[in-house]
Length: 403
Image 1 (cartoon, rainbow, N blue to C red):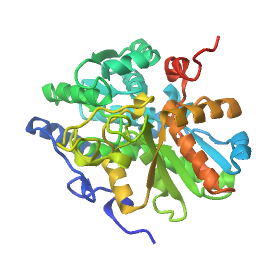
Image 2: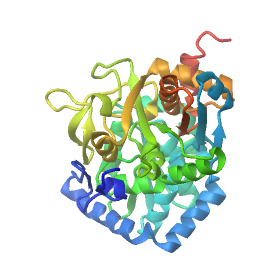
Image 3: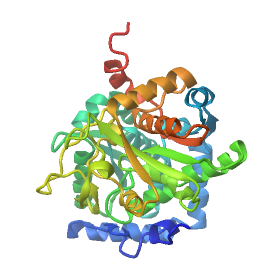
Image 4: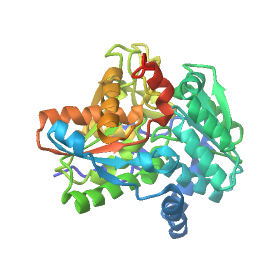
């Protein structure tokens, strides 16, 4: 019997906490903006008119429901029944569009005049740019200079969609620095600007809002498994950076005690501080960008730079609900190294004709590892996005020496 808790029942507590984690740790200048956002979430998120427009956009523009695919060749190779929840088939190529559409609809209802966003791998930036264009709002995207270089195709896509891309050259020049810069922008104009945060991180109510918008993934997958596979999976596996695709897949399964849930983080080069981005595996409690969660920090509490071949997982923290779910024992979190993820990506591409994002490939490796330990199991993998955006990285790694 699963324990009844705020997180299990679907809500953080009144302070925005999931157990010990979450909350709101921000400068006083941001409190009115967050209060306004919380009012909007409480007023509109479950409103029938809002939900009707949101579901209409998901169906007619995003392309939902996304497919559930039986990976027949991987199933034979792994000795398991392997199913893929295909967020790579959503418009713009990843799960990020679900959240971007929902938050942009909310921004319009709150009277915002512009959208700002941060991005790591570029998928949230692309999704935010597309959603803003769809709904007639200007958009500015902050992106670490390192990620601008390694995710160049997505930078071009954002620009073609009408967004202004701002390379962030301060800090670690990756996702953490991009979030810092977006928060500074928001402080300067909290009423006219809406900050569309791309993952289930940050101060309350963002982790809750993002989870609610992304839970469509798990709701669809659960119904599709019952219809197509004839039963629920033994395990559901998803990659975890900030954690939006994983919490979206996991949340509708939290009440199914027989379904194991496994999140796979970026193990990077290894276990050393600075060599990975596995906050749940190697992190300790602390405050990062408005939330109390598990973060990668040194003995003096200084947040450390991270490493991952995957720009979308290259982050020093994780969503507070994931930290709670790990501490409660409901979800197991593991890591996969750069090389392991790239190997799993190549296997999926050659065996299934599907090129997953490098982020998603971490989940594929975790699922393969589970299959080896549990022959004959039924496995659901969250394929959070497609790998087209990763071709510059793949040219330097998997395809090095080809041609």
